[in-house]
Image (cartoon, rainbow, N blue to C red; front, side, top):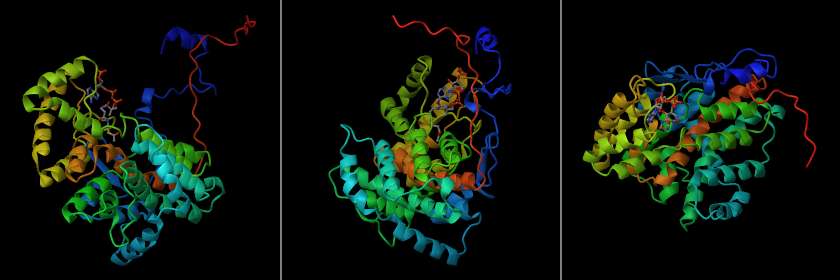
Length: 396
Ligand code: ACO
């Protein structure tokens, strides 16, 4: 911040506050939560009281969803009741069956996350979601459940429509991940692929106070409806510095082409100030545990792309270590998630929307938590422009 301008403005925020948060709010605690946390130095994150990686490795997505909403993992009976509660919530509302084709074809280029954002806004409007400030906790929870159940149907339907196919009605017997692949392709998936996608989806449900989660909580803090908060969160997730990287990571693998090109390609990119997609993280200064989990999932699925990605990972880490010493840049969740999703037949354009599907559960859990103990989130900014009030010039 230029010192002279700060002095001119009186050196305080608009509310007289002298507390400056660092740029990007790095390291600033802005809320309390019981939902989970990320320990960047250790390379550990958790959902409630359990390691998220362990939950992904051992439980179903529905269990993880239950855990975030209820604070405990379900028993077998609770799991069965939970599945019964979710299944009927997946179906598209009638108004959206009519509207979705128009949304899918509205732009010159189909951008699934933009289409999802638009469709979800229309959906929650059509379902008459009301300001969270006016709702009882069980009413808000019902909206959250419906949203989490509907997003996979919306996004897969939009994709199919954009490809000239009819949407596939949710399969009443299939769990979340298998149903996701089913709605995408119209065929019941290989259980091995469904399980790989499920691990990915579980591992991305929640992740501390990331930008989209913060966005959802800021919007909820105004008392706005849950649909507005999730739509805002999708907007935040769409940025390449947050969730928009997995397809870019695969694009990079394609651009590198073969291992011998890797080093010069990466050097050239970093010299030109570019970011290597799928590497680096605001919080993790060691391996991102999601990346390690997904690397194992990718290894189980095997294939040339995995082998290639493995080699490129080593080269990128070495080059970044040399060119950006001390920054501790390792693979983040996005690098191997692209490889896993590609191996499971999810189209590249659907990577971030697939991430958005599972993250909707995390956003909704945060929305419920924010609404249950709310205070308007309203920070200040330090004005650094010309000292006001300047005389308003006459119109010429
Ligand atoms: N490639 C090259 N250099 C990098 C990378 C990268 N991927 N990431 C960080 N750096 C460098 C920066 O250039 C900077 O160097 P400098 O100090 O010489 O200027 C230094 O490391 C610190 O970078 P910051 O931007 O301050 O780190 P920040 O914590 O703000 O960024 C981020 C984190 C945005 C994820 C960054 O690492 C990045 O842009 N990565 C690539 C995009 C990506 O993979 N996004 C997905 C993130 S995972 C998720 O959100 C789900």
